[in-house]
Length: 325
Image (cartoon, rainbow, N blue to C red; front, side, top):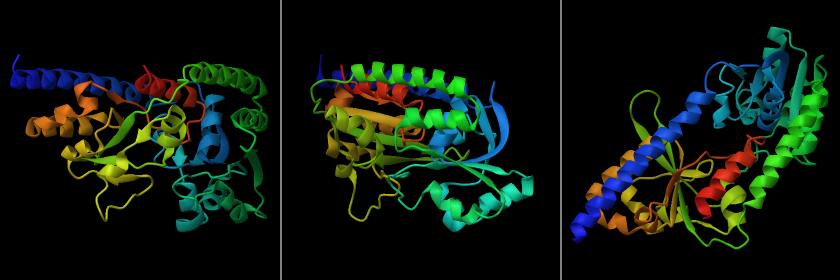
């Protein structure tokens, strides 16, 4: 078989794989968006992603919440909950938003997450900073301390929501799922070079852009580092390119050759990445020599920003399956 025919064969095979990944990536969005079935809406405001996630898994959603907009659940499972903004917005940019909404709606009870290092990329975002805006105004404040781990936080949340029995079941389920995932963790370091690309559509315009996840972010902390893999994203960062919230823009898809990854992970919307990669492969046949492309090691996976703490065991298992054979 000539080299040209081989290239065409690999190109066709890769396109089939990418299209398949695109179809798979659409399924979670279809399954989680829309009305919240079987969830009780209670007259409470919740401040903090992890707190809201635990409450949701206990069968409860608040009237309003303060959570990071980049958390996928905000636009999916929790899309009908009133969002007051992220913790940084309500304590700096839109100071007083929580107290104002509570006063307007007559909500007296406000539950607040107390987490050390709430945001890896934005240290100034801290749910506890909202407390000074609420004290002495007749509100009933409740706190969930995450310093003793997720299981303790589930127990505290269950107690505050009068869902102790549900909390006990959730703790058992969480522990079981996490242990099963950790058992799949490789004993030896994988020493794989990884590139993480995130596709982001621009509204409904049909336009999109692609970001590269920089090293030392959430994926490194929760997936790559524990498995001994290396994030090669920094090799694509040109001089003057700014890293914002752990990501920077990818200018030219052909630049992925600089990282020469063993594995390419696609997060966010997979189609923009597939489209740009397809186009780049047609123009640059040398990209077929990248190990991830040559060996079809390209996977669409959910991202993790330490918000969906109850879903973490499942997400961890998927990343292990992609990076460890």
